[in-house]
Length: 495
Image (cartoon, rainbow, N blue to C red; front, side):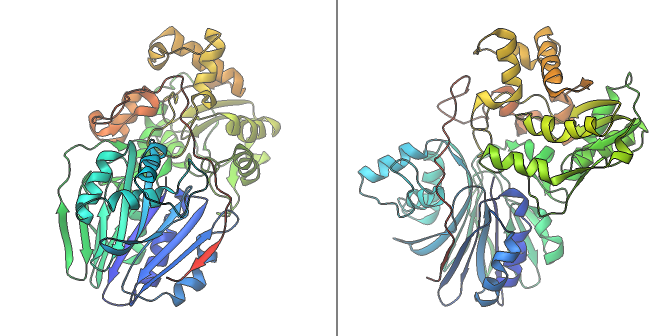
């Protein structure tokens, strides 16, 4: 999931834009980009694979001048994209995942379109594809609507042109967009943690499918929302920054409630220490400690912010390296203790097993009890570039081992009251080499978030698609195809 931010001010916006984008650095590891519109467009894109956004863009921001701009921390694509369209020139940044990108690109190619950012015959730059789809409309608003209707997956976007910044939220609301205001202008963000220190106050949560224009004259609705809101539940559990809020519900508070729910089911477990896997597991651990009355301690410490998230990089090799290097164990806290380890989720399970649990055992832990804050992940996400294969999920590995084959119907394994569910959890516990393993239930997770179940996307746990997604309603054994990764190239361009 990429992070996007835009701002329109009375004066030069580049410094505010720079800091606003940087507050999305937890959402992507591949590219960063800025585009500012003054007398003309200025655009910069850098590879962030081995450096942070601030280091790459500090000098750029000082020389980019204009009163409105957009930017992105991207999980895969190089962006912003510049297009000299039938509506005039614009820059665009996007967040989401387009399942039918190849088919849409092939259709546009047969109609005479071209893609300057193509990495192969079947892989295009997603923001460029979105820009070309928008360009088929009778207006920018009509083009965005047509794009929403054409794609399968999700897309939220910011589009910068002479009119201002068009902000359009994914038609199902899977990804958030929030409008903020301060005395000298307006901003739009995917993460509200970008607002407090840049002095913006939240004034509006953009509705799913809604299109808003912000400029020097204020905020204008260009298209109303669609009335369907099924936001990603994983935002609160893992993806989002603790200081952010979505639908006016704070991330840190939800994680604490998740931890409390986990503790209520552990009346039979007597432990010495409660811990959370840094960083996203910490608040879950704090909630568990508050509910259980057991001391919260930090047996595993993340070494500085220089090591990013081990979940987001595209290669397993890089994920494993980050997971190994970022967590430093403290033997004095671990040795001889029975430890509850709260984690946001278990996706593949390899990092937790090899670079978390193993370190605890190696330092002399007496017992290790793992408590994920969400149920077992069963399906690869259809709306975000994260897990792309069903076969890599820890729960699916367990089911395959129990059944002796892959199966289509996993409903018994998603019901925490079924014997098959219990067998699956026991298999994963043995594979992880932990004393006990207990997952959060769907109902407790939904209760901790605080939204009605029908307003949340729970696809990765249940396999049930949000309302209005077509034509497919489930992905079972067939893997989702991942786009081929283009070699990272640093670029600087002033258009």
